[in-house]
Image (cartoon, rainbow, N blue to C red):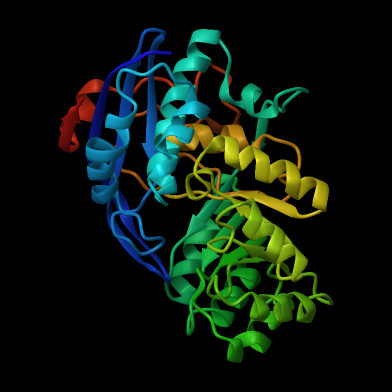
Length: 369
């Protein structure tokens, strides 16, 4: 397709409440989105980089500048599909989240033109479920605060809730939630905040009823993760790589070291949906458990995540919940949820178009090429 015009926007969206994790607290969601106009139609892409460079070295405002000044000018006027665009951007090192936004937008164009939903493109062949289990995430807080939030989500129909933990906010929180919600599928995410000295404590969380633990240690400490995998064999605690799973090669290395039992698949961190699909295929063949990981996206990113989570092999319920759980305003239509299940998007493309008035109201920077 011929890329004719691109519009990049930096949005500032209000949160319903602050969302805390070991790497920081999100008070207001800044996020970069882009619209690509081609000779075949238009498409939208979202860069999931957070407001601050805490989860990774990318952040929303930096991605806005990089897309407008460096990445998108390389594509203007060329005939490219999503894969060719990523190849052309290969001379710019790193920045997988910004590049993933470009891929999403061009995929959106192609899929809309072909009348094909994203979920069908990801699956390539075979049937897909109409709905998938919904999973929610709760930020850091006291045992009482977290337990109240989790219980409310369970009452709404969420069968899996993942809680954020960090040193000093772990065993007591898990025990309190488990006592209040004994039948809930309970996961935790440490965002790499623990040390080797915490191994025994983390292993004991499986005995408290925790089903899965994401990224307990920093990504550059796979030997600690391998020790935890071995120590958790009896309890069945699923040790899941998140920040450490930056690409397929990294996951293959972790699997060789026996430093994980599952993978949180995040298209944005991997550099796009095609890379996520490739990691999914290899991980399924290797016998690893999979979960779809979220990044506090808008409805646009949520649609893409739900399509990904519909693939077979996602045996751990992922972070697939409506964006309205945390965003008080969102330009994009949200995911549909009923009876604890999310409807897999089936319309052509990635997601419906945003509301132009809401989009304009929350735009704090805009660039057009």
